Image (tube, rainbow, N blue to C red; front, top):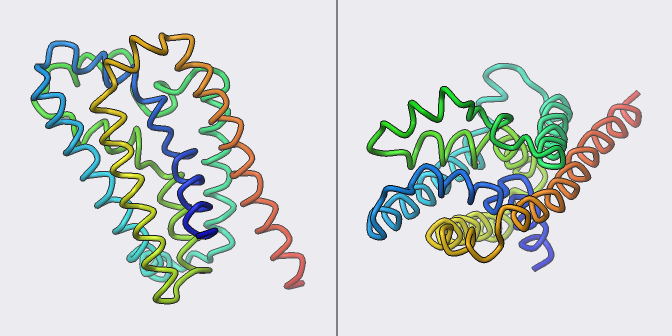
Length: 207
């Protein structure tokens, strides 16, 4: 249960689906309720697929390129901490690659579930590196099942949040969403820094 809670909390902080609400609302403001539900479902499904593939296959990608888990954890920690800083500074959209020009191009597309919603806004480098590093330390059959369940639950939560995005936007308002995003941002920074500290200590012990 502790493993499930840890991975769930870490993924939720890094993915930050609440911070995606205003962007989702702006991109789907002309959609019908049925179309919004469809986009929400496919976004969650895409995020699940991306995360589960990263979890199981990421280690082989590292081996192919000769990247050590310590290097990955440091790089991932920097990316995760950077995402947290962007949330604290209110630059979430820009940090996820959603500039004004890009957003205008996106609004002309029929399907936004994979890009930009699933990737890079939700399942970005931070969550991918987190899962790859997590698998290195938790790869027993029981731990894999629990981790996969945590990823599935995160995908379900993303679906529910995006499906209710327009309602949440009206209830929380822009200031409420910003406040929640900054709290999540602080936790995300802490996760990133912890990854870096753990990697540095691992290097020191190996000397």
